Image 1 (cartoon, rainbow, N blue to C red):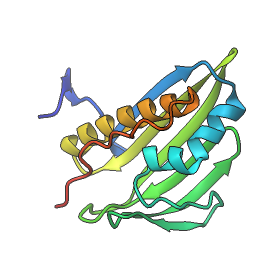
Image 2: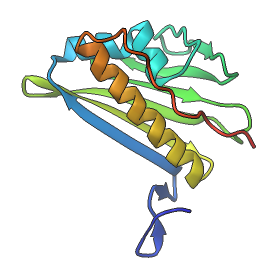
Image 3: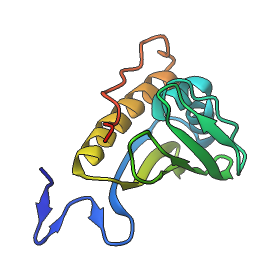
Length: 156
């Protein structure tokens, strides 16, 4: 069931449909945060298994679960924007990853929009929370701890 705030559903907008955002500030510089986010292990944490992505605009990718997408924007040490289209979703979703300076620390932010429903939004919230945990371990040098992948998207 969707959360409600007044008369609107939390996480749903008129223009981009269902969306989710999650951010965490970590005790690391922007360059180190960017390296973690774009490393093979970091990408696997936030994008999924089988992710071998070339971070170049126009580059396509496919994941082990059948999801596909295209890299749209790459601004090194700043942000990425790409599409993500799992099987069963009526349209591709957009994922944006930002690395934002916060004094001597850095905020890593994920934002995803164009999800099909409130349930998908909740699933992606859990996914990005687990991804943040994995990135935090990677940055802290505890990368050998397994990445907890919550249940992935539902097919329709």
